[in-house]
Amino acid sequence: MKDEIYFNKPLSFSKIMELLDQYPDLKKINCPPSLYSRTSTKYLEALDELGIAVVPVEKKGRPKKYKVEKAIKIQELLKSGQTPDEISKTLDMPLKTVYYLKDSPLKPGRKNKYSPQQVQEVKNLKKEGIPVKEIASRLEIPIRTVYSLLKRDKNGT
Picture (cartoon, rainbow, N blue to C red):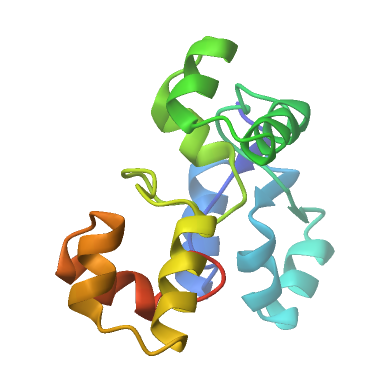
């Protein structure tokens, strides 16, 4: 007979009665903290009088495969300029895991083709009053790209 169970559904009068019928030797009910906070104090007191403790348990389920140190290492590598793909190969972990463990809002996709210096050069030429068509021909950049670079903010987005 079990004297301790994990229960992850809301505790109602009928559920408590079912549990008492199913586990007559029950002494402890473990549940998620969110469920514990929503459980009526009347039910908790009644269970306590019956000698059954209801205890919130932080984590239930599969343990994490990677430690916090791995996520910090990924952040450092991202800041040093490595791509998630390079980090994946360096740390010998799946690319999807690299994206999962990072904290930044980095999105998968291509790197910017134009450096911040090139973007600034386009903006400076525009400030000087040079038409977009001429900027495009001077810097050998498509006209649509020049317009796109002019819209970019300082973060490169």
